[in-house]
Structures are given as C-alpha cells and as structure tokens.
Length: 102
View 1 (cartoon, rainbow, N blue to C red):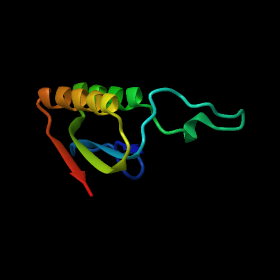
View 2: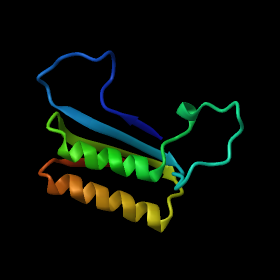
View 3: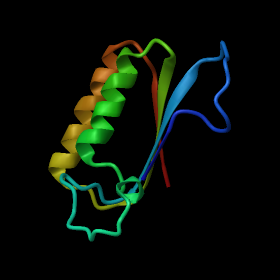
View 4: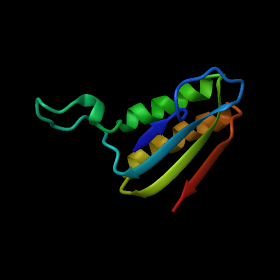
C-alpha cells in the first residue's frame, strides 16, 4: 500500500493537491510481530493510520480531492467499513473522491 501526497520534490504551487491512496494486499489493524532489525518505516501503514490520513486531508485546505486506487486486496468487512466511513467524511467536506480499480 502506498500513500502519496505529491510526486517529486516539494515545491510551492498554487495547483490543488490530491491525496493519492493505493491499496493492494491486506491492511493490518495492529502492528505485526517483527524482529529487532526491522525498520518501522518499512512496515505498511495500519488501517487506523490510513483512515486518519484521509480524515486529516478532508480538513486540509491544500488537499483538493482523493484519488483511490484499489488493487487485489483481502480487506475484511471491518477494514472496508473503516475506509468507507473515512471516505464518506472526506466527501462530506465537499471534496471529490475518485476511485479506480483493476
């Protein structure tokens, strides 16, 4: 899963920014058991982190919309419900949401 705000180096721009969320595989609800040599930055975000990012983007004036790319995934009903609620809150903020899947 990848969560992107922009591509390339950060720049000052008056163009609207879109939150680009790509989901493939599974999303964990809690951190997994990992060894001492695993960098936490290499771990995929948790469902709660992803939904928090979407909710924060809904309140961020610099974020104009949400682009959601769904790949093959094995999300459970609870995870889907969490994501759905976050996306509905994003749309309720008056921002567009575009979803695409293969």
